[in-house]
Each structure stands twice: as C-alpha cells, then as structure tokens.
Image (tube, rainbow, N blue to C red; front, side, top):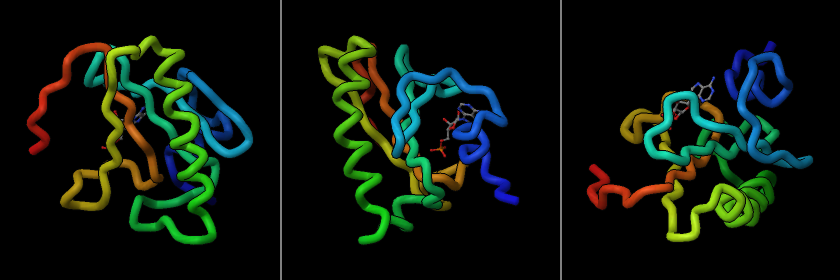
Length: 113
Ligand code: AMP
C-alpha cells in the first residue's frame, strides 16, 4: 500500500481543506501556515520530489504552474506571492510527494536561508 501522506489526502483518506482540484492536480491549505495564505499544490501522481520530474511526468508540473496564477488570484494575492518547492534532505523536504508552496498575503522576508 502507498504510505504517502499526500497520496492519502488526494483520495480523501486524510482530510484536507481543498482550494482547487482538477483531473491532474490538487491544492489545499497547509496545516501549519507560514503566511496569511499558504496553499500546497500537488500532482495526482506520486512524484517524490523535484528530483523525480522527468519527460514522462513533467506535464503535471507544467499544469501546476498554469494553475498557480489562478489559485493566487482566487486567494486575493494581487500584490505578489512566493512559490517554493523543497527538495531532499538539504532542502528540508518533510513530505516526499512533490508539492509547491504558494505563500502570500503579506510582505514576505527576502532572506531565503
Ligand atoms: P515540506 O517541508 O516542503 O516537505 O512541506 C510539507 C508541508 O506539508 C509543511 O508545510 C506541512 O505543514 C504540510 N503538511 C503536513 N501534513 C499536512 C496535512 N495533513 N495537511 C496539510 N498540510 C500538511
């Protein structure tokens, strides 16, 4: 059985606050928001991280980036926002299913690390 937390969220086995969904992607509110708006966008196929993106699955990533401006607009992020994906150990990725954080709703710190 797939033990991935975000795969379980996609099928509804774990509850989430849905923001957007279509046949390829799912977006939901981060459980521990780091900004007034903090949405996670994930592909409906299991891709472990940015390191796992390839020619077979990159259409999911393209689709995510087509959806991000629509999600941001729907969330009222008219003054900009940040998109982040953490990858692997040094990137501090805690959930091993590719996800993109959309952060906004305030002026974000410009220091990344
Ligand atoms: P990362 O550290 O980049 O892997 O981000 C994982 C994110 O998933 C963190 O910001 C967590 O707060 C968030 N998260 C973990 N579990 C849940 C959950 N059940 N529902 C929503 N967000 C979650």
